[in-house]
Image (cartoon, rainbow, N blue to C red; front, side, top):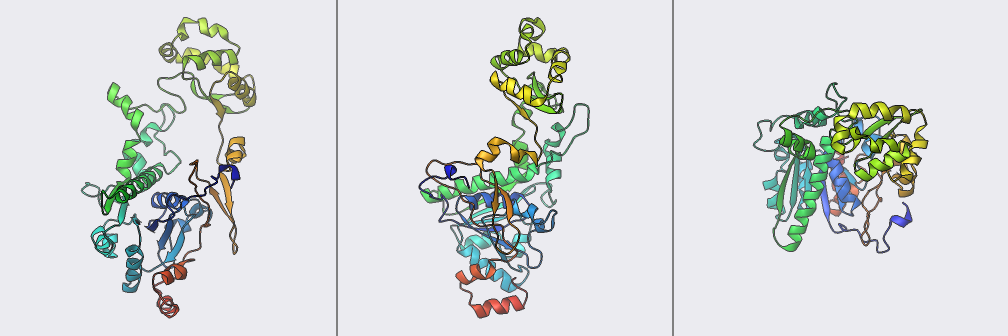
Amino acid sequence: MDSERRSENGVLPLSDVTVVDLTQVVAGPFATMGLGDLGAEVIKIEAVGRGDRSRSIQPKPAYFDTVNRNKYSVAIDLKSDAGREAARRLVADADVFIESTKPGRAAAFGLDYDAVAELNPGIIYCSISGFGRNSPYEDLPAWDMLIQGMSGIMSITGEEGGEPLWSGLPSGDLIAGSYASQSVLAALYARERGDIDGEWIEVPMFDAAVTWLTARAGYTFGYGEPFPRLGTHHPSIVPFGKYDCSDSSIVIAAGTPDFWRGFCRALDRPDLLEDGRFATMDDRVRNRGELDDVIEPVLKSRPSDYWIDRLHEEGVPAGPIYDTRTVWEDEHVKRRGLHQVMEREDREDADVIDQPVHFAELDTRLEIAPQRLGESTDAVLRRHGYSADELARLREAGVIE
């Protein structure tokens, strides 16, 4: 970790918070990883023999590693009485319980809200689901692409005149995970103030994704029409989007009058400022095709680095289009230390992406490398009252791993 990013106090804001995590794949693990980065002790309950389903997704273990640092893996068979008892001991001592199981599964494990709240009235209980209670789709399993399709996200992703596209990111998962961690923090704060004893939070992926339509929904609210697929261009700002240079493409975002003037200077085309077709933003949008006919040949005449430098000299937002390999070579990304490697003694190290949040007084951490399935089972259960003999019997019976 870049030492310049660490506060001198080294105070982790959630250092006294324990989270029991019964989630898998991306949405829930992304939420609990964020809480772990802030200092919470995260106990990740995984199925014996299989673990989190993302452990089996290629490339292994890199896929799993990206959302499961700062957690203790405890492998428990929740289909057994002894396994359910072990889980109940864990949640009885926890501050937060986050689950993303299928509808009815938590209840089958004896870990539904009512059961957990009876054990631990102060629990902050968070359920991440596809559609939530009282939805016509309540029992429908949800995957990210389904959520993107139903929420409208997929409809606005793609080339003009082309088909709807999956965004490429698991956006539905990440949106729900972000809301889950945010809501847990809000509930912890309310409990700390004495406003509540405990809380049950529900984060449906579908609802969460719909809220991120924001300005795209505003287009529909304002015009009464679906937001169009425009590829890499903007419906109401020009020049704004992807433009081809002689060697590769760049992104230009000349979205204000000052940026437009700087853009024209960078291209050495001050005459465009006097052209009535492009006088205002509305004019440029209306005459987008004519403007593109003028600027595209200019941009294609030189390489991307040249244009990025010229545009930056004029204060115009512009930059390269990286892929998931080249982004790590960017000077900003390297200086901020966003790509980190967490060492593991008994196997290959874990590549992770660092927390983007910077505090002046508080801190975040990269401390516990993503663990093997059940790596902390014994250590965690011993702290919850299990003797060495009991653990041995549970392991022999296949209840723990």
